[in-house]
Image (tube, rainbow, N blue to C red; front, side):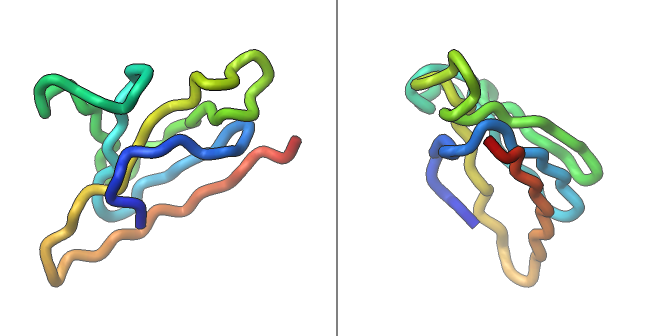
Length: 84
């Protein structure tokens, strides 16, 4: 679980949110002016996240984070990374 905004050093990551949301911010720095600017994956959503190693996307990977969960919440987020 990654509570801070970050970019993955992969070409692409497939994410499937089964339990718990995933926060996404598509700006350059991962900084936002208002919390409503953060997009959310809801339970059952599937997303492809472009990473830093996507050809021509160096420095432009999608900033994302895992949200804080209040106990006894669970977080199940299977991922699949695309190989180079």
